[in-house]
Length: 98
Length: 413
Image (cartoon, rainbow over all chains, first blue to last red; front, side, top):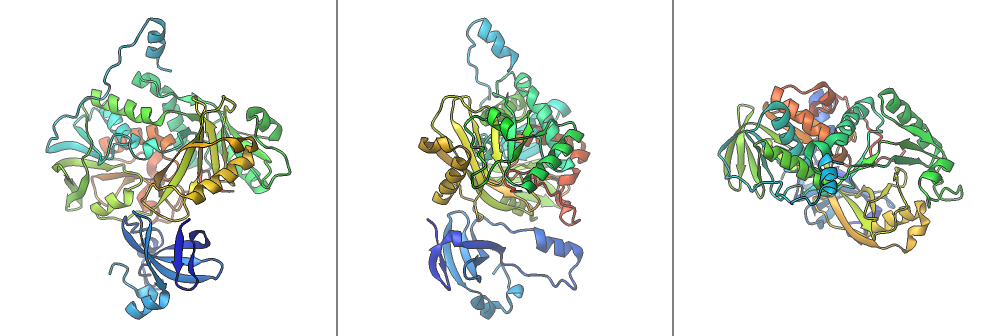
């Protein structure tokens, strides 16, 4: 059984969580071109290695950030969204390739 | 069945021959470099040589021949999709599949046994009717059948109305077939080598070299190779190789796990698929049941096995065939799938002028092998993407023209 260390609920079975995709910079919908918006919606980095993703704990509706290795299936680190905001402003502005 | 098999069966022993020659020394320049020696890449090389006379081709692979998803799928062939684009494409594959053993002179164990996609709800029944009509309109044989007929075709299946997901009907697709997946790679490889194509295994592409928006060659662990054109056919690692070429794909890499049971006496002719239960099951000519499930819940580049998968898949399998409860699993494995948001492949042109892609093969790649190979070969040889591939172009995402293939194996209804 794979365990996800949730920043709010502690270690829980990973089946309680949903992976919500890569953390990336969201373009401003008001000014982005159609092409940039499509790129934001559909294109993925999809890296083999350590990635930073949004994860969601379904029973408690809790969103957080997980860094995990997509080759070894190891979870490197999980932390609340606030940490991301402290480091880089609004999550939407956060530079995904730090 | 290839005619040679009949001949050797009637007139004595066949002397075994080496069908794939030892690798030639790696040259520094080729007309075409194909990255990935899976069935798709090999088929492209085969049709390039056979149909277009392009024989200065090198097929590179970091591993061994057909060692990726070609040998990891559940070997199901069908054309009963939902969208006209999808049906037309897979129907062409079906036509090619039928002739492959004879074309190769090599038995790929192609076996047409019918394919049943079960419907467990009214909305699924509606989708099956829709698929049947689209299929028939495009000349593909599919028909909606009801529980009495399903029980006749698949003895042992639980069609009682008192189950969690009662079977209300199914889409019956008589041309549904299976084939030995490794043999398909070998057949294409042998045919390509016979015509002058070179295979280079243990040759890992490390970088895609380019200048002025064109590919000039690839950097490998065995040195630099220059080329006029390149094709990437590396389903499972598509995003990684595309990143070397400098562009992103709408692909999420997710494992899909499958297993086979101990051999049983033959009892099951058709291939049984349940979208809602995320299960597909068929019996090989050796008697094993091949059982596959849905993709894993989160993305990975690892083919590890998980307990959740086995628990879930077994529960769903027993829902369909309760009498299998005492049967043990013999082997289990995973393949790494290129999942796209519209359950359709990404094929054809890329942002680089002479660099082509064959990717996004999610859970539907094996059955498409011959048509992909033939049409990608045509694309490389003529420099034009044929009409049948247009719907699957990479730029469809920027143009908001996705295909929406709800007939894919991993889609519930």
